[in-house]
Structure formats: C-alpha cells, structure tokens
Length: 329
Ligand SMILES: [Zn+2]
Image (cartoon, rainbow, N blue to C red):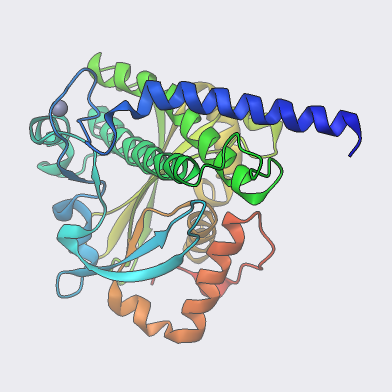
C-alpha cells in the first residue's frame, strides 16, 4: 500500500475515533434513558406524536390504523417496508415529558389549523425537527453501540474504507447537523420568535385524505447553493376534501427554497402539483403515513415499485420516478 494512502487511512481512523469518543461522552452519557428534549428539562420523555391523532392520523386512518414507512438505516439493518399500525402507536418518538408535550403543542393539538397563526406554523416545524433530531440520535447511538460491541473502531479488524465506516460517518454527520441546529430551534421556541422562519403553504384538494406527513431534511446535498439549508415539510389533512402542504425554512434561504419548490408553489394544475409533491416526499421523507385502503389498492407490484424507488433515493438514486406513484387521490 502506498505510504500516502496509509497515512490517510490512519488519519481517518484517528479523526473518527476522537470524534466518536468526544460525542459519546458529551451526548450519549444518558444511555437508553430518554429525557425530555426541552432545554434543561430532566423529566422522563413520554411517547410524543410527531403527527397528532386529532389533527392528522385520524383523518387518514381506516379502522384506527395507518400504513407507516419503516426506513431503518444503521450498520446492521437497512430494512425498508410499509407496516400497518394502530394510530396510537404511529408517528411516536420519546421526545418530551408529559408536561412539555402538552404545553408546547397545545396550539396545534387543540385548536383548528390557522394559516395566519405564526405560532402554529412554527410549532409544526419545531415538532418535525425534533422528531428528525431524535431519529438520528437514536440511529447514531445504535451504530455507536454496535461499533463498541463489535470492537470495530480502532482495532486491526476495522476497515476504515469499508461500508461500516461510511454508514457510521453518514449517521454521524446527519446527527451533528441536527445537534448544532437544535439550540437555534430551542431559542426560537423559548423566545417565542415565531416569525424567524419563513413559511409557504399550498392547498391540496382531494376526494379523500390519503397522507399525513411531518419531516425535516437538509438540502446540503451536492448543490453548493444550498450550503446548510433545510426544509421542514408537513402535510396536514384539514378536512375530507382538503389538505395543506406546509413548508418552513430559514428566511435567508427563501429565494433558493422557492426556486427548489417552484414545481409545487407556482403550479396551477393540481395533478402536476400533486405529482411534484409525491416526488418530493418519496425522495426525501420517511416520517409519513398513508391510508391503508389507498395503499392496499395499489396492489403488490406498485407497492414494490414505490418501495424500490424510496430505497433507491436513500442510496443516491438510480430508479426512475413514475407519475403512477402519486400519493393523493
Ligand atoms: Zn420536559
């Protein structure tokens, strides 16, 4: 092996080991006990809903069930499948203590949706972000524990250019991105600075609601224009005939995001708009829920094609999007 490459590998090993150890002591010292994500709260977290029952899941459920996407990315498991779950166990994460879960989200859980209410718009974004933060925290912790228990990190057996490290590095950066953003979101909440984010919304008219969604993703893919931009995306079924797609983002990203979402925000044809929305969802989101009857009517082959498309997108693409994958009716 040439010396240069050898040095690079050793450097990579050392950097990942240092980062990992620092992170382990800083973040993971609480082990599996989950405490509330509200700043400085030490109470035990309960199962919070990322999409509320009353405001989302109930409207798309059938016999109190919804289809949930399981997209587990870690070192040992890359399982992706849709699973039928009861509404009470869907969309949950160990996010907040009983008090904070009730107090923080009162405005969106107990009042009708109001597009002119900035507090509501912020809270939908805050909850979607926290769910994503928690999901990546959980994933990285699982990966870290696997690395320790397998004694991979720092040992001869450890292959620094192998898939384990790539997966771990991916988990690490996905989490750290959110870890650094969390205090910004917390400050906005604590200071009630609800207009710090900008919001765009589009109406979706349908025969019946088929999907509810609450997600956060970064746009710092390959395109340097997006640097550290993020998009928070919610689909809120508000009645039998209408849902709202709500986008939240940093004010300084407004121009880029509106360009990125032009196919949705500027489109007058509802079918084309719904196709663009479906593409955005399947390419970027995992925290969404479908009406079970709508899903079962796809039939096995379409279900498989849609799943293949989701898997392909999470592995940097390859599969072709079809207009048949529309998630609304
Ligand atoms: Zn709390």
